[in-house]
Length: 458
Image 1: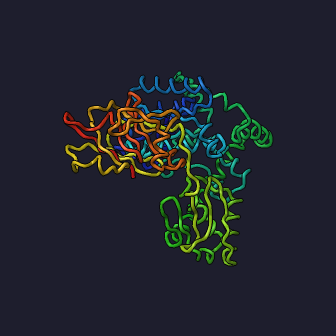
Image 2: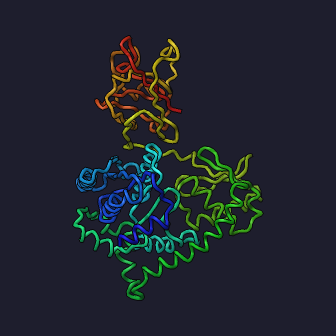
């Protein structure tokens, strides 16, 4: 089993010596083994690894125990550890997502933010052969083209899956052999989730007809993947010619209608995925294609697609747009361990240490989307989070705390925008900097200031 694991990394991924790998660890059997093996072979592979755990807050104390186990394992194995608590249920309800969809979106959003912040080249996840079979079957049931039936990849974009062609039985056998401690997520036994229904109810029935159904599904995926690689290479020839990327939207050249149906549909699927990071089910691909055909009849109504994305026409062409859908980032937060650049709600939060001010009138100009504070008054690490009920803030020149909600109203900042702004908090839980408001009087520069920290949010 370990030989296959190493072979997958060496021959089926582009991992190379010097790479930094972020390992997603839930605390379950599969991810614990993945972390163990990558840690065991990191010197042979010449890589550095760190771990990340997301507490979805769905199972209360059980979720906390998952988090604690991952922390303990990382401490024991001397692995640097990142974690975050996200109220998945609350955020999903706000955005009208299913729990499954919300958990996945928020999980990968956090992992990708860590990847960018700490310069990881790849994110390692613990999908195995049974997961692959379930994914292909789920896509088939929902309705899909070849893209969905090819399944997951061992190495695709920034994600590697070194266990993907290894059976769950072999994983369980290895974990028991090593005596690794892991957590069991009892929600995986509940059939209210689509994937669980497939695993618990459908696959056992199919195995009665063919005991090799899992292997056959995986093999089918491999065959389709090879064929699909050729088709995608053809689609890539058209993509840059017909698709133009903008900030949170995509312009599609109306001449796409002149292309062959197969190419046109693939372009739509790829554009949608580039924008949303999600796969577009085939029934929606057909609706989008029908919409494009009707454009020729000058019908300019809007077509709603999953994940809050709209397809419509304007003077520039066909627009695939997610700007109408503003995510609610409640309960989402991350640590800022050092100055640098961090992405938050699609913008860049920049923290930079400087030795002198650009001018004497920095507080008079009141550019409230940047600010200067006394570095030594801060307690690190800082934290970026969204607003919470009851937040109070010391405005520059004011020794009395004011309600943040009232400040937002006074500054004319819309409610939707307020939910997206990153509030910078020191470890004493005092607000330091708020884009649109400015810096706190508690951390302002004075005659004793030696080191200055510059904030900006653009």
